[in-house]
Image (cartoon, rainbow, N blue to C red; front, top):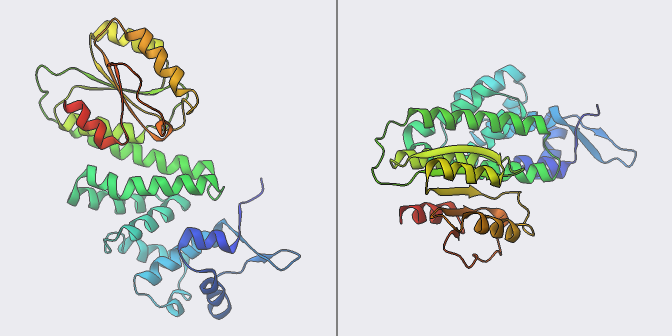
Length: 296
């Protein structure tokens, strides 16, 4: 299998360090030794990218590049873990999470997420750190700058944290409130925001039932037959595709027209889609609006 290759522009996008600075660091301190193409274009590998992220982070924390260049990889990692929560800027947290993803470093991930969650709560941590990080992962994924294993690794860690906090909620259920059924449509697998919704609803005392990924529409009908009138909630990230969303909504309308169930939908694939002419389905521009809709 051919290792990943990066241009100096890729390194700049990933680390925030200008290409000109990277060249200077190479020449003066020998921090990277990229291969070159026949036309003398720099060509970096995965190890180069990890090293630059580590070095640029220490530099942002006040360590001189001349001193960093003398440190071993183990010494750099030790300092990074020590500083995991010493800087409270969003940029710092995102940088640390990138390093944890590239290095498959679960300890570093926890050193970033756990103290912030303990101080600010899971919901704020998700909004100001995890969501921006997931957006950056999406951009890196589209540009082939990360491999599937790295994306799966970091997503699994985030999922573990969310499920841990979901299990810790001990809020009594509100009476006379309909159950909320959280699901993702067929082929949709991006569940982290849905898990966060699950946590928020449980904190609010709602009976929240998580069906999670890739649930066929016919199964929703069976849920309603079992539980009665409920609020269905979903987030459309990749499926159904934007062109298929109207047909999907029409199908749900036909299936549930003889019930008092309600569907609450948001997500990227709903941009530009008009709310259907039915009382059973409401589209929201974001999760906050959806949560407000559930209150009412």
